[in-house]
Length: 286
Image 1 (tube, rainbow, N blue to C red):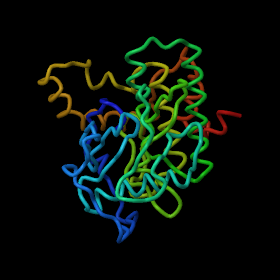
Image 2: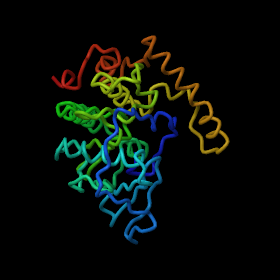
Image 3: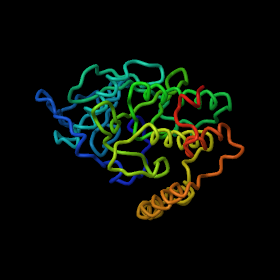
Image 4: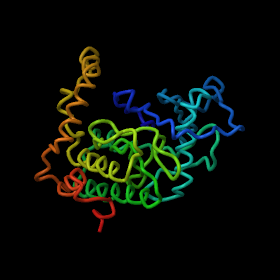
């Protein structure tokens, strides 16, 4: 969510949901560098909930915790832990800071994420089909390493110089011995007991919504939020009613009422992920 200028208006409680059982001890050698102390080659891109994100030398995305509090440090430490677990892979964003420290560096992908790229460019069917396959491959890979992304969405996939997709943003992810630090936004979220750890099943449900975004250009049930607008008053009104929209989406999913995918490319796989008939990314690839 920090690689470009795209930022969803998400329910803050969803993003900041932290299970107390997931706490890691902050290493004693971690020292937080204040944003004001950053060199001139750091261009501020966004100030997020827990981190300030910079473009360094037009080559690196650097995430720096906003404070030394556990709440701000945990996502940085978690993301580094996940990248270390996964190792280098062509479907995963390239991790450049090869240790857990007081910030995290990821390769900068000028094409941005799939949401922004698809909004600004005409995507040919062959390219969209390739991305569909690569998204499946990326999720299959992280699950094979015991990682649950916990916030899968199209915005988490970035486009490299060869127009291949790479999955990133593991700051809420779950890995061996460490439960997730959050969960998906409503349009991608499998209704469940949110006090329990996230699972491959919840990731696969979100994968269905992610692929739906890719082939339709919109998140599931995005029409419930009303038409997109640049009017500040309309945007504020939509943000205020987002909780009601989220509740409606959750209710529909609980009742197994899903968006129509008939006629969509890959629609059977999308519905299979939502319904649970296809239990994994690997099953869809086989």
